[in-house]
Amino acid sequence: MTYKAAIFDLDGTLLNTIEDLHASVNYALRTNGFPEVTIEETTSNVGNGVRQLVHRSLPMGTPEDAQEQVLLTFKAHYSRNFCQKTAPYEGVTQMLHAISAAGMYRAVVSNKPDAAVQSLVAEFFPGLFNAVAGERDGVRRKPAPDTVNEVMSALGVTPDECVYVGDSEVDVETAANAKTACVCVSWGYRSVTALKDAGAKVIVGTTGELADALLD
Image (cartoon, rainbow, N blue to C red; front, side, top):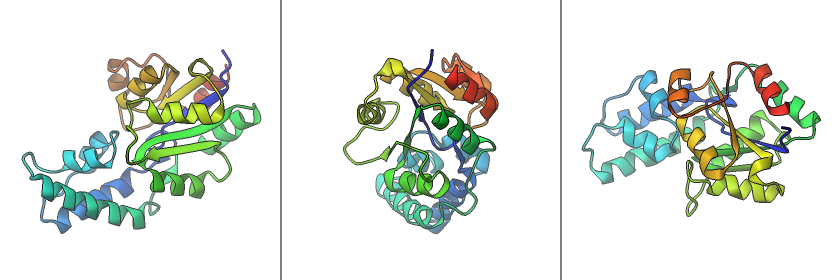
């Protein structure tokens, strides 16, 4: 079917953000006296928001007050350094232009803090999205459907008119909870095996394949 709207995850789907996230995680850990983590560990830890990213990066049993301090340090550092090495994946911008030319609405829903999401989208994709939503206080983050529902309402579309595009098990679950179709990309932070194990039915390996899947 032809969808009216495509709603995208950000990290690992549109943007490769892992090096900047990893640098800020290790800065926060190091500054607060904790051991640093590998980039592979950071990659496996992303997907559920920055609080969970920090929690998973800390040793088990770390007191809550220490976790909060590391989180604050991470947020402050990342807010100043989120564009050091971050860049769109190859072909993403062209894919967005293609679906825009076809008349499809484009939106971003991310578990990254809303201010960072807005800044990254404005920096790398100016004018290419109709709606953008990140994590905000009082709004449940993915895999809860709240932000996806909010975006669909803003666009005036229904779940059966939308497809959610992501790179992780969180995104598969988000699409299921929001009752939208789902397309997963294999270039992000989870393996094809992990995506299949999460229940992904459609997995694409290039942005050209993604455009075809969205416009089919």
